[in-house]
Structures are given as C-alpha cells and as structure tokens.
Image (cartoon, rainbow, N blue to C red):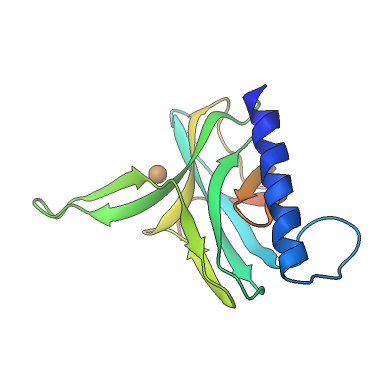
Amino acid sequence: MSLQRGAAGLAAVALIFSLAAGACNQGGGSSTIQVDDAWARSSPQMAMAGAVYLTIANTGSADDALVAASVPSSVAATAEIHETVEGESDGMMAMRPVERMVVPANGSVALEPGGYHVMLLDLAAPLEAGTTIEVTLSFEGAGEMVITAEVREAGM
Ligand SMILES: [Cu+2]
C-alpha cells in the first residue's frame, strides 16, 4: 500500500526534524504541532460533500506544512485540503485543492469557513450534529496526527 509507505516516509522525515531540532520529548507524536477546535458542519441529507475546520498551531522553530488529510471510508471516500478563493473574473467564491499548506514556525493557521478547510468528498452518510469524525492529518515535519472533529449544527 503506497499510503503505508508514505506514512513511513513522513515518520522518517519527522524523526530527522525532531533530531535536528534537538527535541527531547518522549512518547511519540509531535510536540510542535497542536490542533484545536476541530469541527465539521452537519450536512443536509442530499449533500455529497462536507468540510472540516480546525486551527493548527506550530510551536516549533521550523516551518511545517499540512500536506494531506484523510478520513475513514465510513465517513467519506476522499478528503482534500481546499482553499476558498474569490474568482478573479466573476467574483464568485470557488474552492481549489491545496497541495501544501504552510504552518509557519511559532505561528498558526486557521481553517475556517470562507478560507482553508478539509473537504470531505463523496460522503458515505450525512454528517449528523453531535457525532464525531476522525481525521488524519499529515504534516511534512511532524508526520501523521489523528484528530477528532465534532459535527455541529449547520448555520450560525
Ligand atoms: Cu472545499
């Protein structure tokens, strides 16, 4: 499985990064990336797609980048990192996939409505408020991290 090899590669990179940074944290997982307030909007019955929002903080001294996201197939077939942009010609809001979202050293990036988000494509079932979704985030430096997003009622 190429995914497995990819994960191993990321883990190796993460190891190099933490050695280079002189990290002394034990017990696995990255100490430099923190994810907060992960949530998804509940989806109407007919919706084929959903979005997950969260805030990523990088407490390390080196830039990192979110390079992939995935969810169990029981949630959606595909997850992509998207950016919402205003079309230059028509002013309409559109989304485009992002291959690499930088999380600056000692900084943070918010994935929020109208901006970056983790797009869930081909939902297996509607996202129901009160449930949770496990999202695996892959970082260039910090490797993989599984976070839990809470599904909240659509609307304000
Ligand atoms: Cu999107």
